[in-house]
Structures are given as structure tokens and as C-alpha cells.
Length: 118
Length: 147
Image (cartoon, rainbow over all chains, first blue to last red; front, side, top):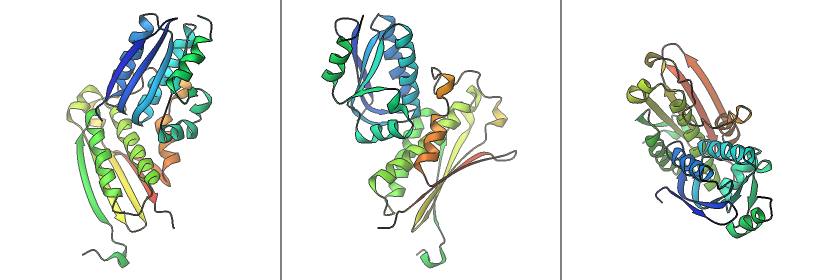
């Protein structure tokens, strides 16, 4: 599946970033660019939808960690939604599952963010 | 035909330009090579990820000049019960590494080294050596788990 990323702004400063394909050293900069565009435009509560992501390496994880840090600095948050079993395992073995708030579905993640202060 | 009893490995070699866009080619090649052994799906994916991390490490450490001219050489040694993959590159002739990390510029200092951590966790053996003549060699070994 070809890599693609697009953001879907919602209300209350929430945006869902939909990602498709493989996130690696080549494609991670495009993910970073889209996430930063959301943050620059005032969406500080982000859901990263990984349901269509088959593969993610440390470059992708690095983008998510950097984005989480920036979102929290701006009184926002970043939730990871619907990672596949492989990505869940990578989050687990690296210890990042303790840092990221991971939800099974995008609606669950959006609901969780709706309950946080703006 | 290879004499398996003598444990002489079959060898597959691949060389790519030191550019991020070619790392996916390496992962595809590793998938093909690993499929010749009786690895589980997770084992193959672990090895693909570890090899990808080694290649990403080379690209991250490469100067702009190195990204245009250096090569990353991948050598797979195939035995019945293990696959050893060497990722070799020599960036020294192309100047010092960039000040700013290319692959993970946003990464907080306390989160650096995820790629190295993944390599260590996902394969049975991960060793990195440096040599003035040949540069850096990362050797990753994945063993077939007995049924």
C-alpha cells in the first residue's frame, strides 16, 4: 500500500491524522510535516490513526514521540489509535506503550480527547 | 547444489545508494531471502525491521555528500538454521556527519537510540564494528526457532 497521510480536523482543537502504508526513514518526514501542520493550525489534540499502517520503524516512532512532546507543551495531547499487532509489539518492547496513550479505535481516542480540557 | 552438511552458507548480496528511498528495497529483499528458511511470520518481520534500522542508521549518519555518493552494502549468509545479515557502509570519505539528525530530528534526547534498541531486541545477535578501511559493519543474526 502506497504511503499517504491526511488530517481530518474536528471540533475542540482535535484532529485525526490518517496514515496509510509503511512509515519508515523515507516516509516519516511526510508524517512529521502533516502533524506539525495540524499543530501549527491550532489542533493540539491529535489522534494518529494507524489502522492502515502495515509497518513502522524508529523513524516513525521518533516522529510520534516528538509530536507528543510538542502537543503536551502546547497543552494538548496525542493518542495513537488502532495500531496493528506488529506495531503494538514494537511499542511494547521499546517501552513506548507506557508513554503513548493507545486506543483500539479512532472513535475511542476522539472521545477520550473530548473529555480533556481545551 | 550447496553442501548443507558442510554448513557453507548461500550468499546473497545487494548494494543500495545511501538514500532513504531505497531502504524499502532492502526490506523486500530480506523478505525474499528469509522466506527460504522456516522462520515464523514474526521472525521475518523482526529481521526486516532490524535490517531497516541498520540502514536507517547509515542514512542518519551520512553527510549530504555521502547521501549522493556512498553505498550501503548488504550481505545475507543463509544457513539452514540461521540467517546472518551484514550491513556495511563507509561514510568517512564524505565528510563529518550532519549536526542535525536526519531521521529523527524531533526526537528528545532521552528517546534517542530506539533504532539500536530495536536491533538488539528483535534479532538473536546484533554487533556493530568499525574499521578505518571498511567503515561500519552491523551484523545481525536471526536463528530459526526449533519446532
